Length: 221
Ligand SMILES: CC(C)(COP(=O)(O)OP(=O)(O)OC[C@H]1O[C@@H](n2cnc3c(N)ncnc32)[C@H](O)[C@@H]1OP(=O)(O)O)[C@@H](O)C(=O)NCCC(=O)NCCS
Image (cartoon, protein in one colour):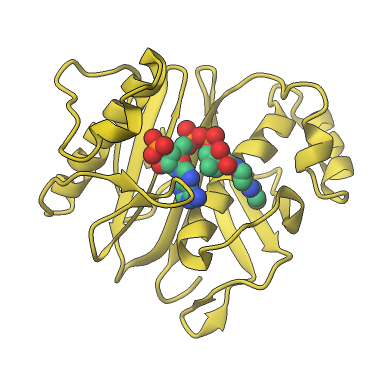
């Protein structure tokens, strides 16, 4: 799934359920002490998966706490991203000498709730979505737009340490491939000596789920 969207060097661990051996590490319990059962399970499973990815990268498995804006706090030298939705959890990690940042997102492949599109779409995106829908009516393009923007935001935040509005990112999907481009309408952080102005991502729809992933290379963002 998300593993298929990732370049070499990224360790991905994913799950369609909650493995019974998934455990919290010291420090993680506080975040979900008062949480409902589903939140507790997704939080625990996705960290279990992140630790599998750490081991795949040859690193020790450690706790994954959260920062001020709920971003995952990775060990020094590691970049990564996590996602969870009903029936799916995933973590994707890399070393920071290969990738500057990663963002992944998974959503149920279903229509976007009424009224959400106007909040998340940059004006120029709306007619393009209509064209995409005409060509490929089997894809819920509005939900894919939402998912891809979530992935962009998760890659953006650890680098920029600041907000990125839904309407500050203009996405363009290439109808002939699984690639999307995000043009950033806010001054980006410097990566490889240049301000980040765009990101490239990939997407995939399978078995009732939409997957989106963005990787920012260390040398060629
Ligand atoms: C944070 C946010 C992106 C999470 O996405 P989601 O689809 O609701 O939920 P997902 O299950 O896919 O992802 C949740 C995980 O995202 C990660 N995450 C949360 N905040 C994050 C941040 N600021 N930066 C990077 N990753 C973050 C966490 O790992 C979280 O899981 P955890 O709480 O168990 O650690 C979303 O809730 C949000 O706040 N969006 C508004 C901002 C935005 O998307 N702007 C788009 C501009 S293009």
